[in-house]
Length: 441
View 1 (cartoon, rainbow, N blue to C red):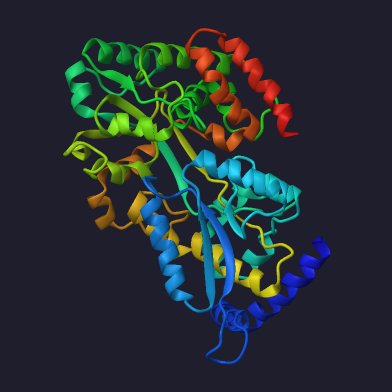
View 2: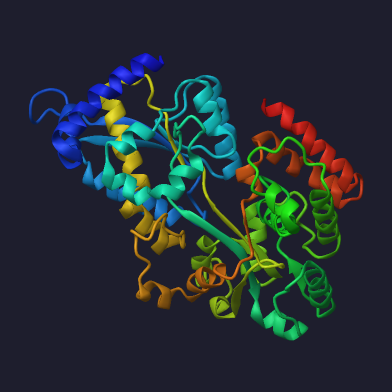
């Protein structure tokens, strides 16, 4: 299979290299068409997404797909499967991977990329990037290095850089007489003061991938000295039984028991986001893609955008990383399908898509080659402030979704309820996380 693919893509690349990318697109589109002029049939490729409905990136996703379809009308047709949530997406993609039926382009999160490599569908993107210097320039060395394997192969490409701190309600903080905490002791004291002032401090959730809860957990670990910082920058750690993890799980247990909403156990991301947007909580850990929601009155209370501040985590920490990103699963398809799927992947990760994601959902571009204008910064002061304060961070680290095996990510949501209700200890949960590592091997 590998040799067939190399032979196939080499043939495609000959066209690319001989005519240049722009001409290649046209040639690929011509070859994508069959029959005489006037009887052309577009090449169909498949794509799956969870960025639909109320998802924070749904508007950006739609615009990118619409612009691609308009640019390639009559030549390439993207058949889209919409999944209603991250969890539904991951479960469906894992099922498709088992039968070697992943869509031509997909997001490789939570172990999907590894399954695509294992089943032979994933394409090594490095030769394709090398053949297209303009595309490579907009992806950038940082994002390439982040996802590149030790053997030099590259099976996924991100389309945004992540800086994730937390958002807080300035009015609630003022009423409680507090400022963003500089230490974790001060953070817990702030939670108590918010509670005393009549506010629920934290928007947390334990369902799906426990996103907002695990961001706090990652920050507690990643700012716990060199040991914790190193752990939160380790891909696929073999053990979770360490002092930083157990201390952080102990703090999370207290937060779930004392400082969050009654619906947090079992809640999805949408529940946690709604609790912050409707001013039912004072803080939420999340990325800049949430910023547009603060001024969307169909989601948030009127005027909320003016009442939200952004901060580094205590001990001057910030999640700073690239995503796993998109995988190309056209291995074994016809040359026309491979060329069409590659064009879509380039569009999804290229300059225009990065511009749209920045404008519509606050996702930061991969490199300075996509400029963040002063006009944008003026119109989006929270994003501008996050970029500025990120320069003051002492600790930069990844999140749990990026570092852990998918089996471990699932174990968090399975065990947080027991931790919240005191049915297991932090030490016992850490042992369960370690045991879950073996499930992904």
